[in-house]
Length: 76
Image (tube, rainbow, N blue to C red):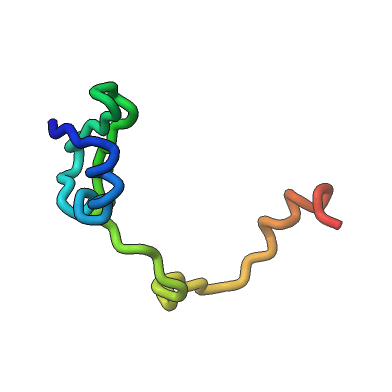
């Protein structure tokens, strides 16, 4: 666990964040008093969803309106 002064953290924040390992913690102090903790989050290994990425994966073989009769009381 590293300790930095608030001045060091302000001057080098982008580089500090870039070097952080998930779960690593850095203490930020002012006048030898703890003022903040910087903790690297674990990265999600999944790729972000893309619109249309599931296109063509769902196949409806027949139209089935029979099941809708159970919901007639709730439909306008």
